Length: 103
Image 1: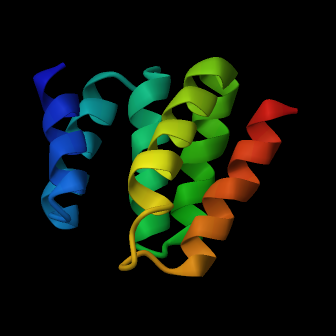
Image 2: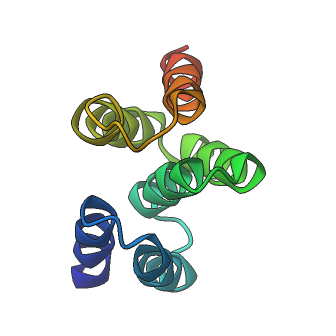
């Protein structure tokens, strides 16, 4: 659990390479964890790697739609929406994923 929290913290600090390492470690140990898959989806959206983001999104949604919606909503409100550094395209992708997960 500490590696997941560290991943979130590193995203907030914009230390994306370190966040990737931390979250990928958690995913390797707990591949059925929807929360970490959602966090990796967010991270790869920030990194503008839409193909990888979509893979993690689909995996997370298959595991637990509710958790996926919760994590994406939180990140959209707290990280994406207020950030001037995150591209509008990335913001739009997260909004699109939120729409899909709520269906």
